Image 1 (tube, protein in one colour):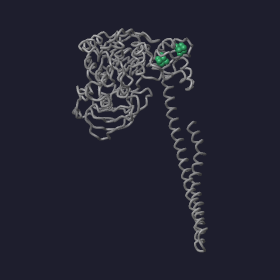
Image 2: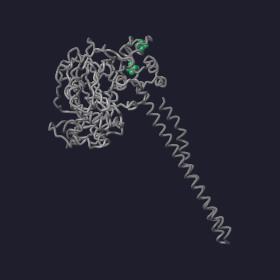
Image 3: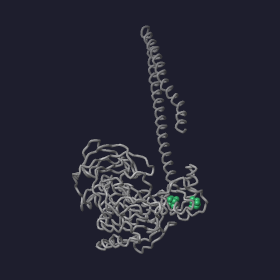
Image 4: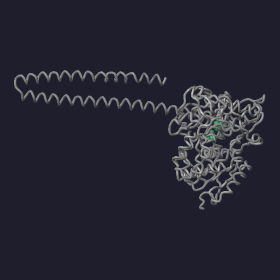
Length: 549
Ligand code: SF4
Ligand code: SF4
């Protein structure tokens, strides 16, 4: 079989990056455990990149396990399913894990403990005879998103077809997180089958399973199942441990030496990257008709009693996960969702586990976790930038973090965008090395959110302006048509009057006078909306001023 990338494979490396202490064995020493179902599940409608999901159930509805309770909001979105059988007790804003700390709309389901599944019809091996578009629809309906943390809808990613190389990302480079490692150790064959299904959808011609060299057990497990495959389609590639080699573009650079251009996707260089956990979820969807209602998550850190990996239903309160792992230690300080580099502090542990929850990290004031990464850094408690340039040296995307910080902090969004803000993968390397302890990533996230908000507002005002202009054009057209009609009528009457005698001529004169009166009346009526629209226009600047102020 022809190999493209893996024939004579020479690993490359990306710029910058950091060698970090892994702290992974803390959670891999215990076996994966499963959380028993709890009484209540909170399902945020926004758990993925893209539009919020739209509820398809109402308060009081009975739902079955695996039943879709919210459909995708638009093309880039994902469905949400009930993790248990029970009753929808509310649909309202509740605490969710988000950087903003704000509440968001959620579907709240009370468990009836009957564990009744919705009817399922697994596709199984039939996927080989199923079209890629039907499989994409299946993934979309199953609510499958990228489980490496990005949560980009899997079906949307797979609209790229004839991509030569499928890359399964088992790198998991961020310290403390070990759920992908444990998944590969325990579910290697299922991950491989998931990869076969994805390869069928995108018509890939080879598949690389990339794993960092600090996961020997996972490497051995994946190699064992790959060895059973005689097609030569799969290859396990071991990459050096350096953070953030699990970033999509960084991994592609390591494997192929190629750079994915700014604002472009990996398909640009004939590759598509999926996390190993996403591949496993796809396998479950195809072979068990099981939507994404659970995931593997690492509960770890110096502040939790029994760090381990758990299989947990989406919607479970984070506090239940911590409790399952022995509870908080007395010196525990902060709960972070994600790792120490890219995660963020969760202010209320009643917030639910969502599709993006790959790790719950509990820090302590005296342990290394706070110093390990910028996730728990408090804004405002930093010193001024001394222009040392260390942040530039470690940036894997070759950005200028100190310049971006300067413009973001002075709210000069045009300038920060000119410095390719949206290429920043929020890896946290810059903040990690910054001697002034500036929470650079928080500034960059703030700038991105502000710019996106400004763009949304600009789009709305553009739409309003276009509507107003279209309305004006319609009025003008109607006016022209009416004038033309009246002109024709007058002409006809004139001709009649010229051709007719006494009485006819009088009648025609009366009709003509009536037509003129009607014309004036219509003109007055037309002036009314015009006057109203002029008044609207005169009012518009003050409305705008109000918004701007
Ligand atoms: S967070 Fe952004 S700017 Fe900082 S090192 Fe990572 S990619 Fe570069
Ligand atoms: S590392 Fe910190 S202090 Fe040094 S240049 Fe970057 S932002 Fe400034």
